[in-house]
Length: 314
Ligand code: SER
Image (cartoon, protein in one colour):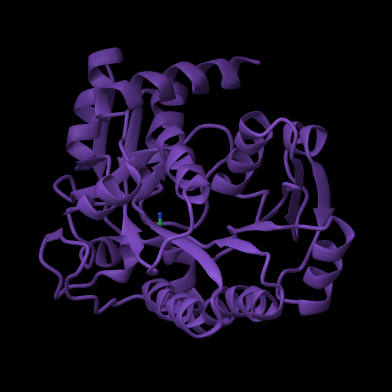
């Protein structure tokens, strides 16, 4: 069977690394990376890169046909903090891209889809350790779009037999491409500032505990769930790795860089963080498709400092 993979939103934080990871994991596959904006040179050199506005159904259809695509990763979305500034635009963008592909998949039964959800589906009424099945009353437009998206995915799976798979990402920490517009981004920014100036002013409170994951684990989770045989039911799987506060992270950085200091100036992103759980329970993912994380706060911190240091001195 052919293996022609399209990544939508391939120039973003996760999309870029996902495309490069798929290139390595499936050397025989055709990897088509697409985004509304150009990606980093490493991405463009190692994949077939296409400029694509995924809100335009015809453009998506053309690419699917041109490359005989059978797998699509839908990674384009507006994240939580920036979405709060333009709620209607965020809703429109996040839902249009997903619904476009779902409607295409209705009549293209050979398509296999991945669409990520988020810890943002939880809200103030969710217990601070969120189980797979718990109260989901999101308080942000990003969370509302993710929860609605999950419901649409299940609807298309049940009613039209669309093979779509979802995991709920925690905050994703990585060094290759900057994160943009999220509430968990402090856990990326802090490493740049630690290396540049040995201190960081954090936009969340020191005790604001959130679930997080290192990029390598996120890539493994994303591609493992897609490599699994078709699931009977649609489950937007929680996938957890670690949970920490800004203070915990500063402490982990200090083990590597003892002079590092941190100060706190919470802004509007604190209100978003306050609605999310401190940790979430991923028993279903571990049981159903053997999900397992590798990186904890200390090993992630070491990797981040090592790779960013190399990147910043080139
Ligand atoms: N990292 C995302 C955000 O902060 C959560 O999925 O918006």
